[in-house]
Image: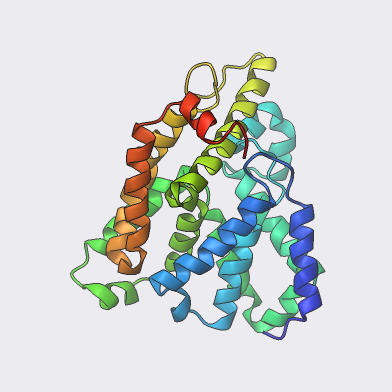
Length: 281
């Protein structure tokens, strides 16, 4: 694309600067999601079907998909700052809209758009926006249904994938990368589980301080880290990953590791989790 290396370096450093010190939604997660996009994209064959601009779009969107994440959900923002958020983004998925806007602003400021070219910018912006918006977990069921529609077609293998739009494939890839921490080697998955539940419980503590009833995933007195992780795998991730593997057989390793991790979580409780991690990361 002809983007000067110094511009790309500056953009990456700016993303690092604009990722806050949350337990989970931090620069490590952002960079990890980008690396996962590349790895899963290679294994699935999706990246090989993209042109240079599209490859850049998926990777830069992955790096930027949680820009300036406050460590709480969109619902919490609405409840705590309704007037501010209504003025900024009158939509349910306020965080993802903000991530998109900040990413595009920063790309322009650091000269990344020049490499895309003005004639391709509208398509690039649409692609990046769709990819980042796909990480909104309130839309998870939409993508499960889209996968089921694709798998229900008579075509098989490569013909079935060719019937999909590039945009949908990239959005599915981003979704997979965003939740891929649950099918990492179990020792790594444990660390991510600690981080994400730390963030949930911090939000719950804040909600209690403000006299609000904490959400079901945020109340450290009413749930456990292990239960939250097991439920997420069983109720959210497992079906999605298994369908992705049918569509992209190269991702079979993800389903195998997920099955292994699921069994390991069934043998755990929070005390054992803390012990195995030596109370640290």
